[in-house]
Image (tube, rainbow, N blue to C red; front, side, top):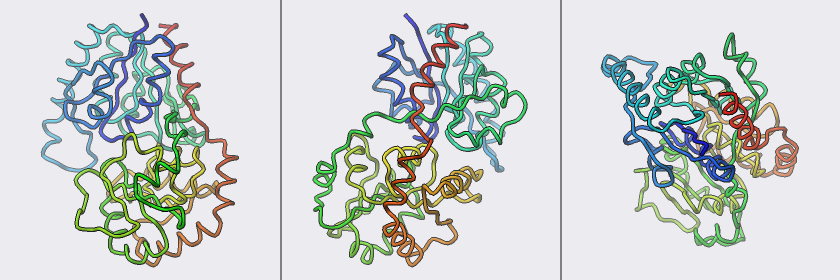
Length: 357
């Protein structure tokens, strides 16, 4: 039996590509295992589907925190945890989607001479993948432009594969999506996606301008866990913390999308040809990866972009109007885009590197 260990976590973006790969790996005869954190979102998303092994992991912060003093010890314990689990599982290969949990797993796999493949969804590599690159056999990147941001060994290991896209997202029903929300087919539907953790800025902007927006759109608002406001009830407004099985239908129902600029979600929007406005997370709260993602998509004519600092009701209203006006142009650009589903390329690379041993 061929065995593979998947790892990655911290946000849904480090997990959802695994969800695209898992059914195909099983079809190809792989026994699939997962190493993640005890309480991370990765356990919520895959823990019921696979044998799941929790390990310790320290967060890799770019800012001062007293926890930075203890986190190196958590990473060391995480390496020991991962080493123990990997020795017992004896996988042929490890596939990592990044996030801080990936660092101890990649190091432990390297110590055990188990091949490691990394995948980076963003235009530029995150800190975890940069730390893991010396221990990896290959570094898969989602975009050709990503090669411009890699140096040395990481550049030599890089392969442009694209990002795996969940098949079920392509099979949604507009009718079911409208029915879930209690919407009609008379007005356009705006889907708001703030990421798995939600976006306080998007949530606030939508809710402060709800009366104006619902006069023009029906709104599906995925606001993030713990961010529901039950008292906010309005005809044409449907809010939920997180979309699971219903997500394909909600996407099918959407005519326009307002979203953060995480790499996985924007690749999915292109695959579905959904006209979109992106509001990237600012450098004050991130390493700037979403800003680069959004700028790249805007240059290719795939998205309109509003920077965080510029977002208000008036700008949102005007930008959505511009998106509606040029809707067909954006759809055509997405349908002809070279950004494609990376599932097959990644599966073939996993098979190839596992055979090499």
